Length: 349
Image (cartoon, rainbow, N blue to C red; front, side, top):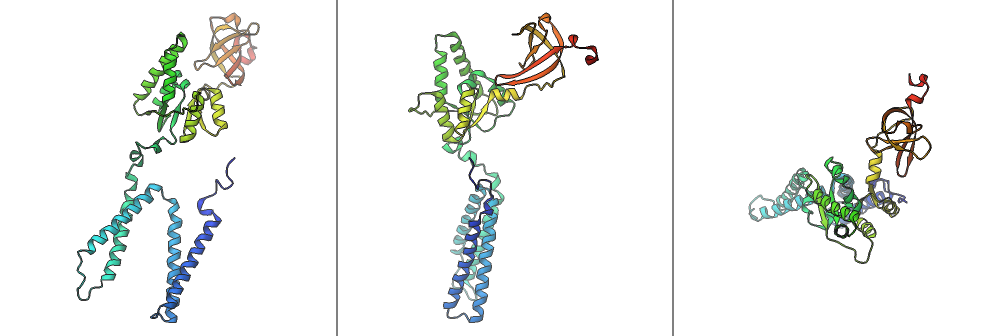
């Protein structure tokens, strides 16, 4: 459930407006009190000082309200530029002689602080976009936040490499060390199928690391209090607010329940399959019998099953069929079709 004020703009916060108004009032009051107790300020001039103080507070509030559009790195670089400008002003003042006729030292000091501080901020902001903070945090834990975390099933399947080569994966891709350990256990298994899957997963992990334009890291972090690999993946995804990439249907459902962002490779493959509408004519090769009497079964190039009514007699042949209906199941898309030769001539004309 989303927070009540999650979608409200920051500048639209009522309490923020109250704080800004209080700041203007307090600054105006402080200037009034200062002018009231100053012995050289007359009553008429006191109101001028109060108006100037109020105007200065309003200008500060306007500047502060515009800062919300700035990126954090711009604020940091701007602050760094201000510090450099003020430091340069202080160093210059050591060179300026103090006892000179007709020379106002205070005015010069304030002018140097003002102009060099201003130029420091503007120069810093102009060049803030050239600095890459990601490279500065490359060896810190912060870079792991939002990373793509791979499941064992994804590495065994291997389609993640084609997805990465096509440029659909960006950012840091993390392969946890406990996933590598699970693949190693499978590769050492006495069962031929498990051993093949384990070795395939290890080979594909190495290929993924060598993929050009893909940043892959083996994360040496484990959760010793958790025995199950799936629970460790969920805990790791929660810790770094990452995206879990998996092919496990149950794991993806549990992750969604726990508020973890999930990318399911099977769901992606289903969404990329060819769209066939009822009544559309397609060409299919019948390779086996169906469950019902006289049915034949074939497959499209993307693996979609096509069940052909009265298609048993076309076993081993390629026939033109017309899609009658499309059924979407949890296992994928299934198309029911009829041979064009068995349909009335008026419909095929």
